Image (cartoon, rainbow, N blue to C red):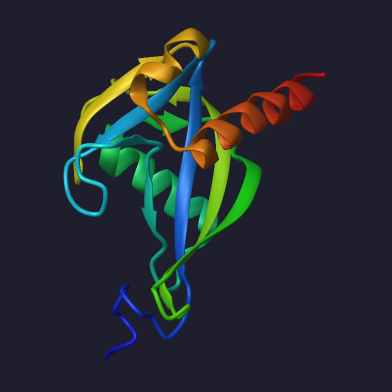
Length: 149
């Protein structure tokens, strides 16, 4: 096994996510490649060696959606650990989620994304997001509202 293996890793992988708002709507992406192909989530991906988390967030957002964000605010850090039947970590991701308001660009799918969508609060249920994604969206609304005060 090499240190680049995501299944049964030797260390956690750092993932970066962006909760981007345009008014009351949040940006969602439908995955076009594994893992979780076809599922809806937030834009993001792996941090590269030598890249800051904020630079990774901006890069992933642009690559996956063609969009640019205003100032980034730390929303949350989530540990996603999946154990196998023996209790050994099969996958381990540390996900750093930022939140921001849309700044520029037209939402278009790119990189490993099949489709992009802006969704209002009442529409989120239709996208069957994970509880973790719904929680970070709600938390991001609060974090961004605190900055405006």
